[in-house]
Amino acid sequence: MRSNRALWVALLALGVVAGAFHLRHNDAEAAWLPPCAFYETTGLHCAGCGMTRASHAALNGRFAEALSHNPLGIILLPLVLLAVALEAAAWMLGHPGGPRVRIGMRGMWVLVAMVLGYWLLRNIPYWPFTLLAPGA
Figure 1 (cartoon, rainbow, N blue to C red):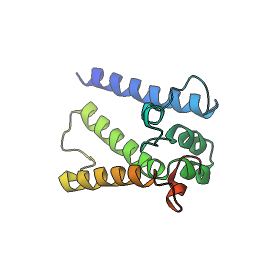
Figure 2: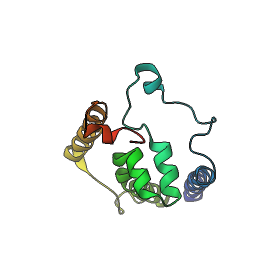
Figure 3: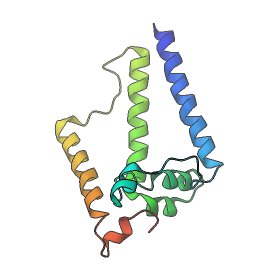
């Protein structure tokens, strides 16, 4: 059972590494990337808009540029990756009590409020909120 779980975790990790490698060595504005459906429909930026360009910039060591594309996403991305890695390790090893990221219900509501607030503020067309728009 553990070997099957280890295989799934290894495949997931390989997929993440391959995706990061591909993104690092290719243009973030490439035509193969689908456009944001929310932006295409409404003309407004969603909370994730700019995250592909931000990830591309971060993978190439341009952290100031990455923050300009999506500051909240770049700040939360390492925390999310750590949480996913810890959860995958606990699942793979079959240890539900192992090291995990537990933020609780209050933490979840804070996170939801942060993302929704960021989503709202980045669409206000006045300074300083225009600094939150992708590529500002």
